[in-house]
Length: 158
Image 1 (cartoon, rainbow, N blue to C red):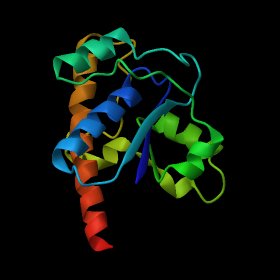
Image 2 (image 1 turned 180 degrees about the horizontal axis):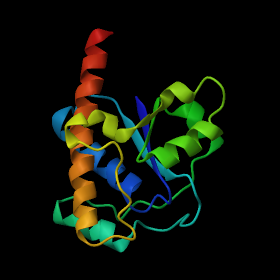
Image 3 (image 1 turned 90 degrees about the vertical axis):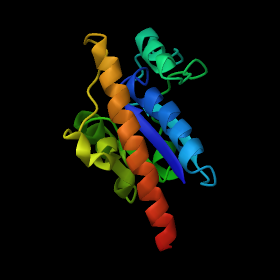
Image 4 (image 1 turned 180 degrees about the vertical axis):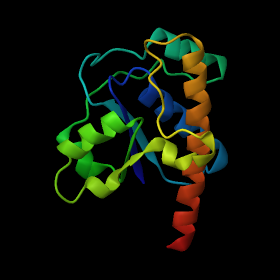
């Protein structure tokens, strides 16, 4: 299973989701074969490390984002990844416009896997206060656990 997490610039939410989901999967389902990546719908920060505040918030919870660099969603991603998870509706709409025929069923909102969160979008913490990065981590951790459970159920059904 190949999963791509997507936000706007690939420096806050989607790299956080990539690292958190990788850690949750390794801890809760180490036997599951997964390939995980992240990208942005815009190239504002291409090649840059995740935002400093994102790295600091993640580090406080034991996640290391230092090796990641921002990249833009490419046309081949739509064919390559089995599941492309947008952080918000605006990025989902952008992905839907770019998706080649026959690949739109791979696109979903990440927080569909955390219905208990009470929200459907991971808010962009870039222009918010410091608590925004902590809130994003809370949502991403919850959705990561929900996604692992979804993938487990799906693999048992096949």
